[in-house]
Length: 414
Image (cartoon, rainbow, N blue to C red; front, side, top):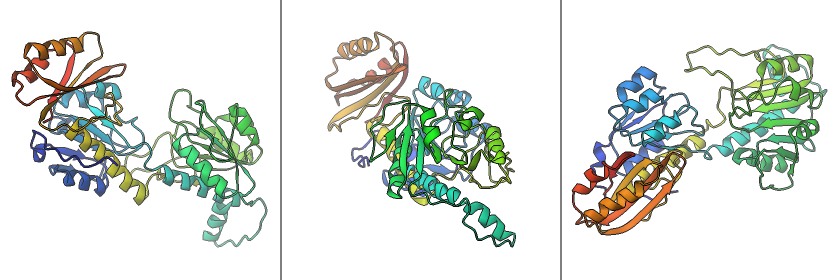
């Protein structure tokens, strides 16, 4: 965890306005308050476009989860905005290009709910193999159906993991611990954990697995990755789990395969369309089908995961505000910065074009600025320069830096 920044900033922290939507965990609020940020407005639900546009001009930090959408129009109005925290894994709800062009740093928490999703996946594999969902439904209807037909242990069965990143690899470890043989397939070379075996193709994995679980991002290349064609490559009666993204499995194809018996069971926590609130009715072609587990995107919805996400993202935001460190930012180049005593620290975000650093150094030279530290990092779109200068530096420096061609944002940190 990032340490609490002890140096004082030149701006009054109590005047930094923070907006948190979608019931961001209390742990985040405690991190902000512990570090001197007390001007916090918190909302229980997601905010719509009209509400966000109205709020855009007032806040310096905005925290959201997966339901609140930050559009290009929002960033165009958000002239005071310094940083956004996505208190979740994904950032599809944020217009990344608009945030980058505005010089707004975006942070998320890609790993904090890994264990929660992995545990749910293993639990679903067990329940599908035992057909416990059907037995549960029958008991609720008064039917006592005590039989072992088509109910199996997962010990000795083969689990095929599609996507061997942080969640997929954690599933791999848990699966081996309960006695499963683990195969995985990933388009990116991955370090093999335990006794898992890397498959050379998706077809190889599908043909050999008793249970297939998806842990891939939502990309054009993964849309409907599991469709009628790929289901035909699976074992007869194999089980399928999707706790990744709603568009990586073709639900119509899955439903037909379940009805025909080609698939022996299905569990999913994600859907192509998900209700905006708990008051909206949910509909899916998978409803009322046997041996199907449907959960409302709760893979990361454990107290432990939400606590960890709250702390993780809030500390990244605090570190960025207090020191300028951008480690973990998805829009601003990542810089890990040392704390300097007895200096002014200035942050300059600009479009990544040739000549900007030359112009910055020209200004520093003309004003006879004593540079105690200078840090530069670029990505494809923007450059990020951090300057530690002598406290006796001319107050003209900020205004002069703002005149540099292709400047996006300049901030005096302390």
